[in-house]
Image (cartoon, rainbow over all chains, first blue to last red; front, side, top):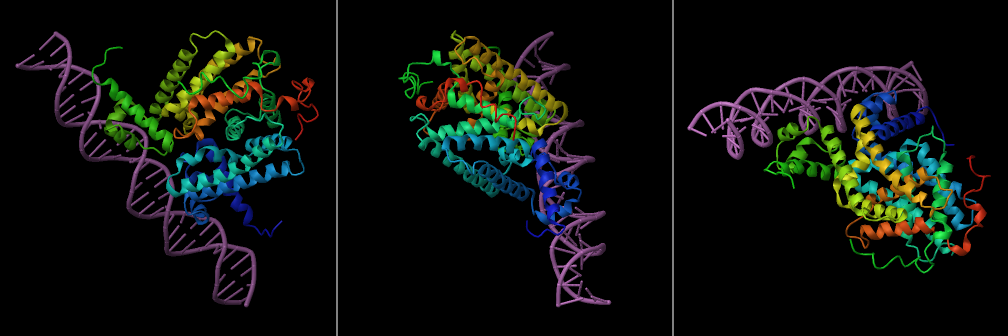
Length: 215
Length: 215
DNA sequence: CGACCGGTTGGTCGGGCGACCAACGGGCCG
DNA sequence: CGGCCCGTTGGTCGCCCGACCAACCGGTCG
């Protein structure tokens, strides 16, 4: 694409090595020496690119989220139906999440940061979630979702469920990312209760007022 | 309850302080000196109770899971209907998760451990998940769920969604734990697609075979 | 050809980490 | 009353962390 001499791939080596180690051990448990060694270099070279370890994590996060959004956008680029866009976006998101170390680092390691670095990470995450908020709102705007849904809550459920797959998924299991995403979508789109055993329609949207609020 | 001289609450002070700090900063980013200070003691005292920092985390995890399971079991103790048991269990689990620092520590900090300590944590988590597996199987056994569900996948979705609430929930928000749990349950039990726009019944349980497996 | 400069090398530095321990205090029991 | 022992104290130890830097290498360009 752009001009690439010999140094551009080296940059990625540091990011890739850091992403893999951060995912395996966590940010704090990983040393700069480990990262440099895994990248086939020395700590000094790493310091030349990134003044602090936190700066490396932040750059990793920014690039990871940008690549994630790009992958999802490309997966739904030529689809018009808002509900189908949401379904395909979740599918693409899960595939990306399970294929890149950086995507999983983003989920957990911001907790180890303090001060400005932490604020920066939260800002990046909010920007990322805004994109998904848009997808959910558009899906609801199509009128094909139940009209009484709390869309913010739905977004939390969708992203939370997809992200949690990273905690148990193994590439050696029977299901690929697409199968998991489809299964989750089936559950959420149609519900897990059998049609014959659903509550009367009146209940949906007015969930047992007597129980809400106590506890 | 049992005999309590003066030292029993001191024990809890270390665990409580550690749980709060681990949740806020992560396990690796927290020092034993911080924990001791927050507990109103000195590092030596902490070392007397726990030989290593990892041992403290493991004990925290074991006690946290036991207390969690006890809270959930007590919440469904006198309920017979399996589907209702599952619903109430998720509700109780979320309330517990959001009220205890230890419960959130369990979710993330095992990644920082290595070797035997890590295996021990995974063993504890598997034991915990087995309980939930039982609840899901019993709910399915009632015949009130759709018959074609992948129960393992459903368990992952349920626990993953509930656990993810800890990442965004604020006690100062509009919703309490019970409201969030009920909202999630509504989504999952009845589905988010409007009845009028559902696919024909034939689709459910045979999710578009043409798309499964590629990508 | 020689000056330049982006990038690497190998080593160093102060700090603060987890782990440890000898000495001690004071409540309990014989 | 005296001895014992559980638990705390305050400090230390060696290690290794993140950060840093002077010297250097080699490709590029004037």
